Image (cartoon, rainbow, N blue to C red; front, side):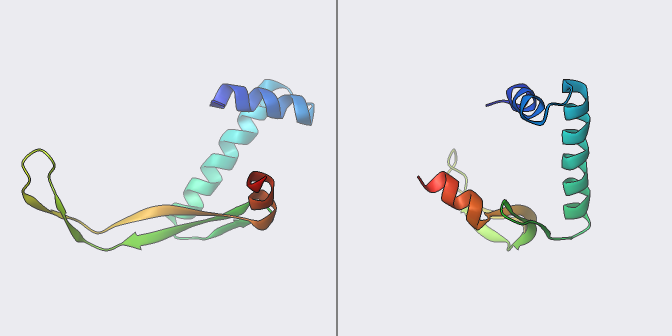
Length: 91
């Protein structure tokens, strides 16, 4: 399912216009992005939790040259599914 298909499905289920659905979705994504950028943890009960984790620097291998390279430390986004979502996907 791509973004357009997703927005159409949500608009139909919520009985909203496609434009209102798109605005709400974009506000949702922007709010989550801003919260994560600020270092917040975002928990949506039943759905899951978004958080930012630190990845330590490590050594890797360039597959083209087989030389050892240093991969720098960085932050990454982590999502942990909530129990209700996990149960729906499980079956």
